[in-house]
Length: 127
Image 1 (cartoon, helix red, strand yellow):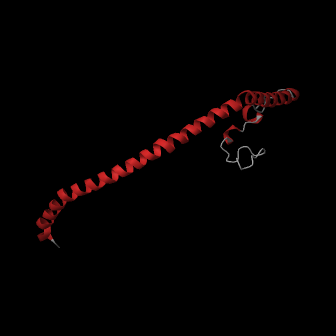
Image 2 (cartoon, one colour):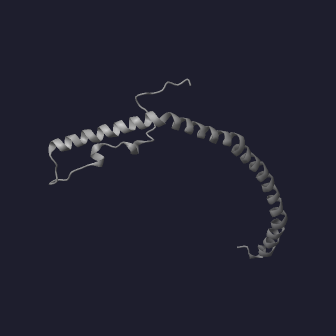
Image 3 (cartoon, one colour):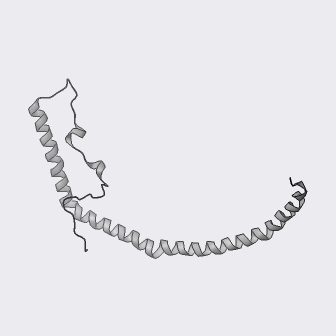
């Protein structure tokens, strides 16, 4: 791998913007229904701590195995496309070109005489 891994911006294409969740996105007290300030602050700290801690624990336990599985999955998809899908499309392209030529000849053989006959019939009706 020749490119350097960006350890600061780990989502440069913003594919997981929908997962940016903060305390204010989840919990909110409307006017007239406020808990004590110390409870609200403690709830904020607890939410943030547990969200970060659980994410850290889950990634520590599972991330490497899941990354390996996804690597295998995308390797398989690439393999199937390189060795099966692309050659199949090429085969279809070759065969369809042959069928297109055959279809064109049949249409010209059957429809050209009919269209010429119809033009002879309707020639007297020129403007």
